[in-house]
Length: 528
Image 1 (tube, rainbow, N blue to C red):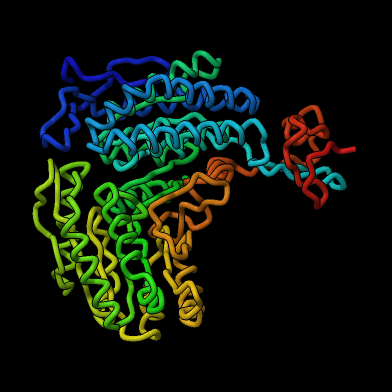
Image 2 (image 1 turned 45 degrees about the vertical axis):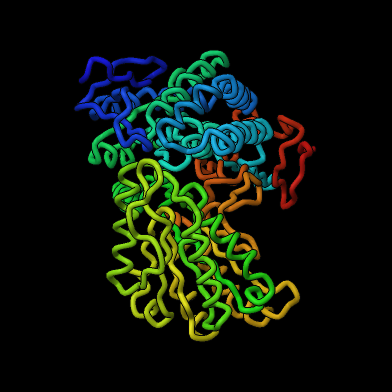
C-alpha cells in the first residue's frame, strides 16, 4: 500500500486499510490522475466493517426516532459548513459546474433530503404501525440491519454513498451504513464521511453508524452483498455490475435495491409538433445535453409519427445539437462506454444524423450525437435498439402510424420515466388515450409536456420503475417516507405484553403525531 494512501473509516476510527493496492481518481478536464491515492480494500476490511455494523445495528434498535433525527440534522448542518471544500473537491473529480449544479442545486438537495429523512424518523409514520386490538396483534417496519450503499458517478452529492438519498433513508429507518465510495469521487466521499463521523460523535450514536470503504475487488463486492450479517444493499450504477451484485445477493436471499439503466422514452404527438415544434426541440435539446447527458433520466429515445412535421423536428434538433457545446464527461470510462453504445446502435442499423466523434470540448468529451431508425427496424430488434448510450446521445424512432407506435411502446423495457407531448387544445387526445396506458405500464413516472430530467424530492415522487430501470418496481430511491421502507423488515408482535412492545406499537402514541392503522382506521390518537 502506498504511503500516502488515504485511510478507511471502520468502527468509528480512521485507520490504514488492509489493501491489495491503490488507485487514483481522474481530473476529467485535464485527463490526468489527481494526486491522492486511495486503498483497494481486501476482504479483511469488509469483514471488520460488517462486524462493527452488526454491533451498531443492535444499539440503533434501542434508539428513538428523535435521536436518529438529531444525527441527520447535525450532519446536514456540518455538510453546509464544509460546502466550499465539498464543492471544490467534487468539481475537481467530476468537472461538474461549481454553480449552479454543485453549489446551488445538488448540495442543497442533499441536505434537504437528510432533513426530510430526519423528519420522517422523528414522526414515525413511515414504519406503518398497525394494531389489531381485538386479537392483540401489532406490527410495524423495524430496522433491517446493516445496509451497504454503492453510490453512482453522476451525482457526487445527492446520491453519494455516505450522504445521498439511499444513505439518508437507510439511517432514518434505523440502520447503520457501510458506504462504498464511487471510485471516480473518493475524495468527495471522504469529506462526507469525516463530517458524518463528527456528527455521530456529537449526537451519541454508535461509532459504526457510518463506515467508509473506497474500493474492493469485484469478488469481495459480491461477497459483501451476500454476507449473512448484512441487512440489504442499495446500488446505483451500470447494469452489468449491478446484475452481478444482484445475482450474488439473490443467491444468498439478501435484499438489494438497484437503479441500473433507463432510456426514458419521449413520445411527441403530431398536434404538439404543429403547435409548438421549436419549443419542444429546445426542451428536448436542453434535457438531453444537460450535464453532458449524464443523468439517469436523460431522454435517450424519441418516438415520432411519420410526417413532414416530424422530419422538420428532427432537422431542428440536429441544428440544436450541432450548435450546442459538448460537455465534459465524468471519466474515461464514461467516454468509452458512450462511444461503444453508439457504435452498437450504428452496427445494428441506426443512421447517424450528427456526432459520434471525439468532441472539441475540454477533457473527456464526445460530440453531441443523434441517430435515427424506422419503426420496423426497432421492432425487428428491440433489445439492441434500447442500448443505453449514457451521455450526450439520443435515438429517434419514426413510427409509420399509431398502430406501429403502440407496438413500439409494448416492446419497451422498464424505464424510470416516460413522457408524452400532446396538443394543448386536445387534437392529440385520441392518440394519447391509446398510447399513454401502454407507456404507463413500462415506466415508474409518466410525464406530460415536460422533459424528465428534473427529479423533485417529494413524498409523491417515484424514482424507480420496472426492470431493468430498477431491481423491483415497488420501491423508489427518491421520495420520503416511501424510500425508507426499503430498509425495514415487517415485524409482528402477537400477544406480547404492553411493556415489551416498541414505542410505536404501545397504546399511547409516542409522538402524538404518528399515523397508526388501528382497528381498520388511520389515526394519530391513543388506544383508549
